[in-house]
Image (cartoon, rainbow, N blue to C red; front, side):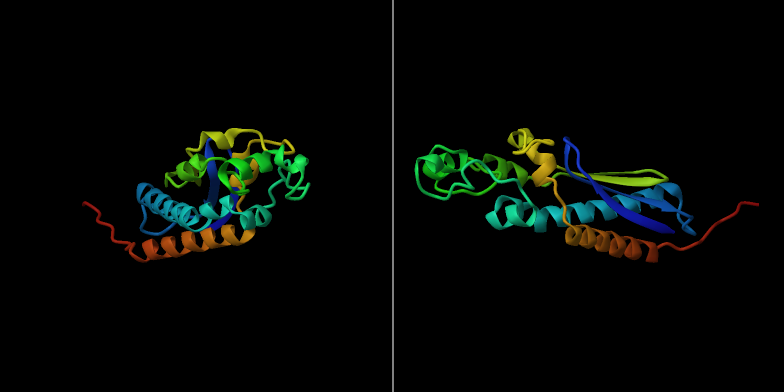
Length: 185
């Protein structure tokens, strides 16, 4: 059985990823195999949510994930141009300049863990849902929403970690499969 992990972004889910498999697993019926794949993907999605989601709301995360600069971030932190900008207004009203955050509602809603997985014979998909509607606003520089272009970014190290989680879970589950068949005569 061979597999490949990839990621995709969608407006309905925060992070989407899927694996396509080929080949048979001895002793596993289709339904059992789909349950194993679905459970493995949910574990990987939950791990991403727990370990990486909060990092998107930090200044270090903005740099790590390559967010576009907001109005006022290029102007420095003093002068009328800064204080009239989006970043300056945030600093004045809420005392911070953190990305993807105005009042904190989006960050609070993004903390809700809602991981959904589907599995069929040929592929398994997983979506990590984001309930922060404000992240559907256009991202600076265009190209999509903040959800797609910024919050939904999964870097290579995170993809590799999710792939490892899926691999460990599936290996654990496959170890419990026995090829015992009963034939009625």
